[in-house]
Length: 533
Ligand code: GLN
Image (tube, rainbow, N blue to C red):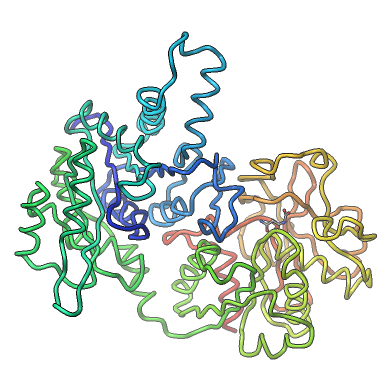
């Protein structure tokens, strides 16, 4: 076996949204299941430095890593599939590439040269690709190139792939994901769009080695031969990717199609290893054969785009499987809720999750929902803004601080139970200035949180600016709220709960980011269990 890190590039053709991230994660899973070390990286061709400042309607959820990087939601899939942590190095945008090239230019590092897309931008892209390989931690680095081949924005990335393929030879392979549209009138799968997108790649000097073809119908032998012939790949390198009932089936489909075998062959790696997916299959088995069902309301303000709450939805799926139950999620728009209609809107739900978010829109609906769950003993999980809303609700309706609010929503409130830290008050930039990434949290014994985690020291990921205002600690505690998790260094409140309620817990952090197929998050597992009761 060669000691060199092997690089696999995943490009996409014909249309966007074919699921490059899932294919990349599935391939990584298969290689990992053969005993190899693998990581996946996403290169995003947009000019934002990171997706942190993007509205969720643009690109869905912003995923946060341990090291505090605000990244593309595909990194969430990578972690959920591989159960291996990612970092800033796993997500690079055009904005970040240009930023570092321009910084080097200002420092005079280019020695008077004209700074150009080729070679300076492409060199920076190549460096970022090789960075993960250089750590020596991985035998395979899979790099997913965002966008669709032919986009103006992705050209420098494709050029970097061309150069690397030329430099690395058998240490590098290119997998191209395309679509075979089905024409109902003639009852045929059409290969022309695939041929065209491969031609386009060839124009840029890149011959794909493997074609993964998304299709609604099985791809027959003849069609595979035809695609192989027109696109200069071997027939066994034409892989069928049928629509799957869940993304977690895709590794199994890809194994049947021998995607891992062809990749190892192209990279001249030994193929004697076998795929061990027992744990994965056990999860799938539970997922497909639930014994019970539970209805959970997910209350947020971006519910029209389900991608906005990707990690939460996936964490609920993981937690459902552990509990042998199907979690039916009702997506509820917080703007549609009021004190008047809340009983009717939450009718039939066995648990309520109030989602993270920013800004005033829909805030009163969230607060009304929390009041209802508190007063009617419905299991409640509040995440980040959801926890902050639980604090506001308690202040207003139990502590009788009628104008209690977060300073974010009402800067003039007399009862800022959620507030900015002094240190944050002078920050003017929006990007990258929140409390981001993993922070320690100490759990008090004999609390629900302690029972859920089964230990007293945990680490969870954050993405917020505002905090529980410790000036009110006494009032809350005296009224029966338990501040069960606290940051040991700063004394910031991380978890609140109500012991008088069967399951009422709010967390300032984002547990959803850490839930994986192999390690479902204990908070979600316990929440679903409580809802089942
Ligand atoms: N808007 C809140 C804050 O900045 C909560 C953020 C969130 O829910 N991620 O503190």
